[in-house]
Structure formats: structure tokens, C-alpha cells
Length: 431
Image (cartoon, rainbow, N blue to C red; front, side, top):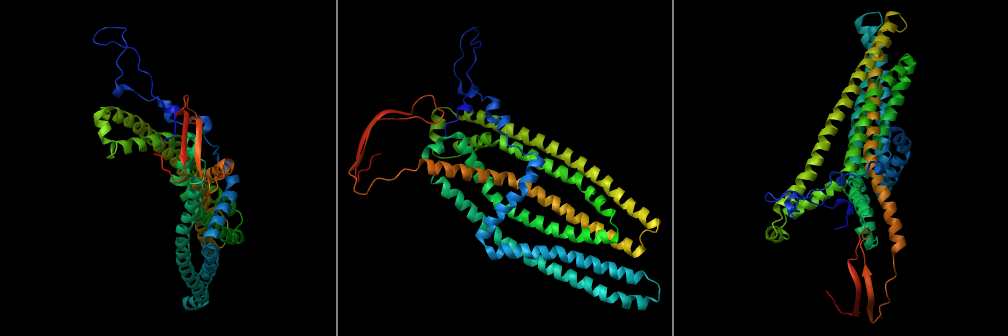
């Protein structure tokens, strides 16, 4: 296990023993406690995860993930993106056809004549919706094929590096924590960023279609539509940032919790735990780290709920203003009734696409944080691999001989091995 100097136990304090004040208490392992701050990363070690920073990083994150997806399967990547873009554009076709049908149905004249006039537009609506549904199914199929291939490629790259880094890197607590973050969620974040990136492209196509239609019907509604989703977008992004910070700060304590769980539920250490009376000590250590994680997540849930509530309230108020503006335009005669009906559909489509865009951006933001951990770890591992690789001896070597060799774990105060001399001949096994 890597050396972790920050997780050392506290020193027992002097207390009364058997009524005799001033005597040092016996070292009861069950009473030893971890310093609470030792389970948290220092605040200054947190990454800069402000919304403006993530917005600037979105293109690079999505681009890197899509390059990985293209390497995993060019055909599935191209099909997924192309089909989703067409799906978004078909929404505009259906919207324009619906507006034409409403215009024909709401004009004067006998009902049969109006129905015959609206029939081409109604057929266009049906065709657009049918094509959209079929292409959505095809896009979902290609996207589901792409995800496991990206997962495999990202994880394979991780293991290529973890098996090539110098052994001393595994004894570096910071490097080990970074590896665990990259392995636990960072590698899986690649495929999730790909999915979110495709969602961004699809939503952008839908927004372009809705915005173009809405601008033709009445341009003043376009900025109101954009403003209406900003509060909810802030709330979701702020919620994701809070969650990432908690997980990042708890990564050390989570690793200790896993170690304690393995010790208490594994056959190999079971005899020593019983022989040395370590049960109470291990349970106390587990309680400390588990309670810290529990309290952090409960507090996170409270803060996320408040952020979401504030965002939904503000979003509802702005939505009311958007529809009120449409009502004023209708009453003033600025738009005819048929166009007003098409405008309502355009607003709903635009809000849906904008909400999807915010959700996709939030997913890229959320998963991109973990994917960034993966990319940062890969970069660091590549550096440690190239810096510490040594050439193996020639096959005809006679043996290996060590003279007074010492070894110290990174960060340790004392050497684990000191002045070791050893000679190993070719073909000889020394345990």
C-alpha cells in the first residue's frame, strides 16, 4: 500500500488511569482516532472548476473525446453525429409544415376546402415525424454500439500506462490517488463525454432550426426564449460543480474506506485481526471515514436541492414573461392567429432544444471533470514512464549483484531497506 503520511494516527493524550491523575494512558488501539482533516484534500488542491473555465474547455474536451471515438469506430462515430444532426433539422421541417397546415385550416371558406388546402402540409408533418422517429432509432443504435468500444479503448490506454510506469510511482500517494480517480470514473467518462458531445451537436441543430423558424415568425421572442433557460442552466451546472468538489475531496478517505472494508471482509487478514484484537480499532476507523462521507453527501444533497429550486423558480417566472409577450403581440394584432399557433410550437421546440443543450453541456461539464482527471493522469503517467524506463540487461548476463543498496518510500522518514548486499545468478530464484 502506498505510503500516506497525512493519514497517521493521533497521539493519545495523558489522562487519569485507575483514578491516578497525571499518568500516561495505555495505548488502547480502539481509542486511536484519525485527524479529521487528514481525510480531506486541502482546499487549495481543488481544481479550478468555475463555469467560465469549463465553457472555455468544452470544445477541447468534446474534441478529444470525439477523436477517441473516431479511433474506436469511425463508421459509428460518423453515423451517430450525422443521424442526430438530421434528426434536429427534421424538427424544423415538421414545424414549418405544421405552421402551413394551421394557416390553411384557420383561413376563411368551407371546411372541406380548408382541409384539402391543408392536406399537403399535414402529409409533410406526418412524413417529417415518421422520418424523425426512424432516424432517432438508428442514431440510438449506432450510439449504443460506439459506447463500449470507447470504454474499451480508454481503459486499455489506462492499463498500458499503469503497467509501464516506474514502480516507485505506485508508492507516491498523490499519483496513486490520481490513478484511482482516473480508473474509477475518469476512463468511463470518455464515452459519457462522447454521448454528451453528440447531444450538444443534436441540440445545436434543433436550436438553429427552431431559432430560424421563430425569427421568421417574430424575432422578439428569440432572446426571451434564450433567457428563459439560463436560470435552470446555472442551477444544473452549479450542482455538478458541487458534486465534483465533494468527490474530489473525499477520494483519499474513500480509498481508506475500501482498504478497511477489504481488511474486515477478507479471509487472509482474519486470523491477525482476531489474534491482535483489532476488531474495535478497525470498526472505529471505518466509522470515522464512513461518517465523514455520509455527512458530506447529505450536505451536498441539501445544497443541490436549494440550487435546483432557485433555478426552477426563476425559470418559471421567465417562462411566464415569454408567453405574456406572445399574448401582447397577439392582442395587438402584430401576428395572426395561425402564426401565433406556430409560434407557440416554435417556443416549445426551442425551449426543449435549449433545455437539451443545457443538459448536454452540463453532462460534458460534469463528466468532463472526470475525463480531465483521466487525461491529466495519462499525461503524468507518460512522463513518469519515459523518464524512468531502463534498458534490460543482455540475455547472456551471468547474474545481478547488489552492494549495500538502500530503499526509501517517497515521503517516508526512514529507509525500508538499508545496506542490502545480494548476488543472484542467472536462472536462480531468490524469494
